[in-house]
Figure 1 (cartoon, rainbow over the protein chains, first blue to last red):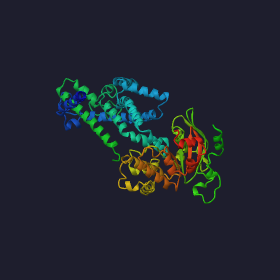
Figure 2 (figure 1 turned 30 degrees about the vertical axis):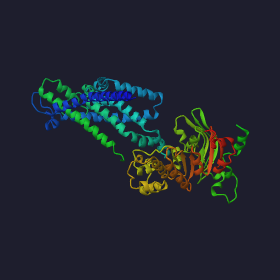
Figure 3 (figure 1 turned 60 degrees about the vertical axis):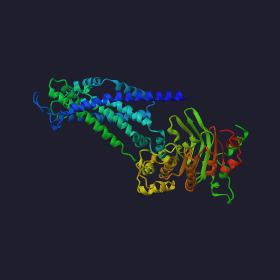
Figure 4 (figure 1 turned 180 degrees about the vertical axis):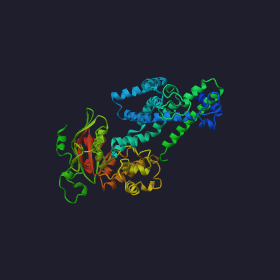
Length: 279
Length: 285
């Protein structure tokens, strides 16, 4: 009996050790990527970088304010389309999704989630850019909205399904019509989870460069309207990182740091916003 | 179906105490005649898809009395109370035939809004189900505020409902805390307060104590006694002692049929039906 106990304790230690090791291994890329970006990016970060626009090629200095604003603008526009459409589609799937149509939508969303982002960019290029004969923030936003859609739809559906059916019954039993029960009780209860799903989608969209390459394209200065080629951080990182100039490389690192910081701030803000509930 | 039961069927739906005049020495609750019943079902049949779970129930529910619904699992008790406030139809594939009269009006008639029925006929569920995102105070007001109804005196409404549910003294200082921070028994009384805040006319309770410990059960039973002064109450219960303790009238359901409906003391001491006797003496179920 004693030997068995000793053996079990040994197995316990080995498995615990394996779990710890796996966790550390998973943390290595995360920490090193973040650390690398901070170390390499901090040098290029300055007030001019955040407020200025690029100087002519060959001149030192300049910044990426136009790309920062452009990114926020494109992602903001994408959110205006992607979040309502995704959340409403998710509600539809959770509430009425047991039909053939529902299964079709769910399957399509899963397929769409697996479509390479550059393909979506190409699709929007053919649909919008080629016809309008111009690159624009609108086209970029549409591409990003399409990429956000499946994540938000499925997150909304999954988290709505996690809300206990008892709460719906409670709401209906109090004489709430179904739409109010869904919005005021089910959706409200699932909100933290849905917000997490939305943040994942937004964070992914913030970092996408491929679908923007031939939709919003790039711009060395400010775009006056969203109907013009617009700079964005990921595309600028790509352009600057593949340039031959050392100073541009430094700026690309700084832009990467700004991008990571931006996504982080938005995640924290979203969490604080939805956590507003009684203690 | 035995010959015996067919005899009972002829007079069923109206416990003897309700359709026969009694001498004045009898207590008040035995008095109401059938047409004075607060609610009444007429040939009520309920289905889940093709399965018929209620097979023609005729039963009258008197105002200011407690009616207990007992019977073995799957006999249709829960379906029965859920059909009284149109909660049955919430389940996909569920449907109803027959009539349910509330103050002589069929709640299943064309043009009757299920939502309005549910505000008049409140419900307490088996498991306490306060809204986790709302505070205690907002839980009480939920039926009003989530519906966009005006709440002229929220503090007064909250206090009144919580007092009626005998919860006020325990929570008056922590009204801002989450409804789910309370114990199970307190949560169930919170749900009761939430239903009472809508000032319903009938209260349905679907095994309200089955998730509660004995002392919490005792509190809810005391409450049922008090609330009987103001509401028609229907309690589904698996607990026969509970039915005997809280109910004036008891209905025994078996396999989707109403086998016996009479004064509680009659059902428990001199049941007319063999199946009732077998059930209450624990021979099955």
